[in-house]
Length: 216
Image 1 (tube, rainbow, N blue to C red):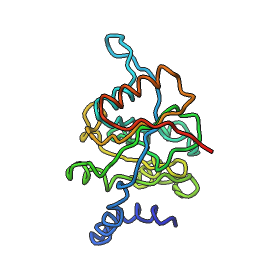
Image 2: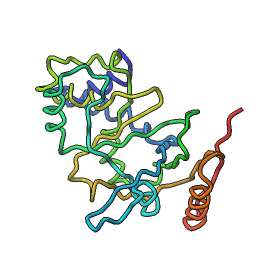
Image 3: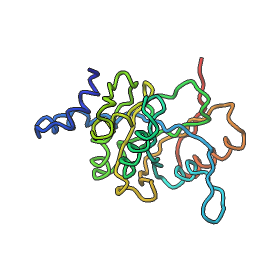
């Protein structure tokens, strides 16, 4: 079994010592550069005003969490999918990456979790999990509707280098967590010029690093 998946399983042990050791083993997992993929997705508020949620979150020093939807790679019927998503409706997730991939994402926000206050750090560290393939996670589909462990494993489906924070909605405000720890914005040189200028201004205003992403 994958070492980090075993750590996840140990968090749900009936032995308090095993649980404590599992949390202790991941105490530094957050203390590496972590990147949030950027986008310019728009949503409309109740007054029909346009908002760029991620850009506004970066300006406001918050991490924007999302409702949990079951990954399409998990082979379950639609009624099971809806049941699991309903059971997880009180949880929210945030996917972060430990490196910038060579893809078409226009920009990445880099966070330094060492700047977290102790209370926020303790609220997050135990809920920070690696993303793995469906095969590696070995999700028991027969228990998916009844087991919290299998439900949470379903939220961990992702690519190599991705990690997910899974938190109770009650610790968030408007599905966001205040975390003033932005270190840099990494921007593709082929990103929209208007977006590039907006991000330059953001970096200047917040006193953080603006970098262009280049690959050899």
